[in-house]
Image 1 (cartoon, rainbow, N blue to C red):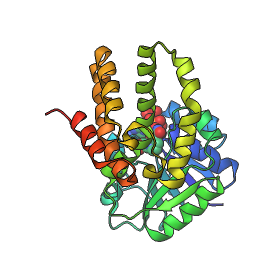
Image 2: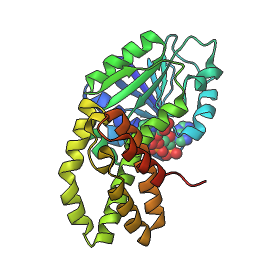
Image 3: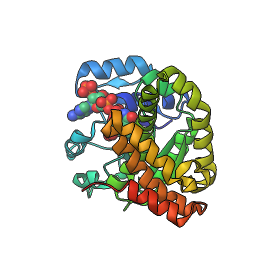
Length: 288
Ligand SMILES: NC(=O)c1ccc[n+]([C@@H]2O[C@H](COP(=O)([O-])OP(=O)(O)OC[C@H]3O[C@@H](n4cnc5c(N)ncnc54)[C@H](OP(=O)(O)O)[C@@H]3O)[C@@H](O)[C@H]2O)c1
């Protein structure tokens, strides 16, 4: 079995290490953290690994440190003894292969391996990892080796081009996955204004949210879109805006920005009249 070392056995590092250990994909070797106590705690959680061990035996080194220290941590490996052909993979979404520049000339294979998942609570992350998508880019043979390893722990992988703009790639994920809870929060605040409790609000919208998300994933945003903007119903949009803004102008501004963008999706859908959409665009035009 190949040897896996983890630099940064925090939420992402220890979740992946536990899964690779449980499925016997890798033998867990060195666990290197900033503080010794973290590495020891991670070894206890994983049930394997050597806190503070050496990297020279590692076939794969997974670097899962916070983004602000990633470059420094990789620079720190310049004079470290590494196995020829070892895979060095970092798990950042926003940073790319340029992070490995300090190791240019070393006989190692470098990869960005970004698990597209919210690793907020470690035990839950382990239980819900199945199906998680990990994007890979970098050395082709290393991507292929890691793809097999991620598949073996129930994940999916997709190779993305090495020249992908990582900032925009990451922003795209943030737009969809991180802003979805914010949309739900905005809806719940609007319900509160109407006198509907948050609990009832979630009960009312849970089924339509799930159904809409499934429809978006199956058929795309335009096909899944319904509601007043999809119908070009400017009067309803105006009434919504007027009522929401009485209590909360920030919420009204968010509604307007989203309705404005939704008008573009509606145009693609092709059911609303051009006049209706023009009226909605005028009503929701960003200020300034
Ligand atoms: N959390 C997510 O949902 C998520 C999802 C996908 C990708 N990522 C990416 O994965 C990476 C790790 O994120 P995370 O959420 O797992 O972070 P985290 O829970 O904060 O864990 C970071 C780990 O790095 C260690 N560390 C910090 N500075 C170090 C240093 N100078 N040398 C060695 N180890 C050091 C920490 O050890 P100490 O505790 O001893 O400081 C800790 O074990 C980041 O690039 C992040 O962008 C995160």
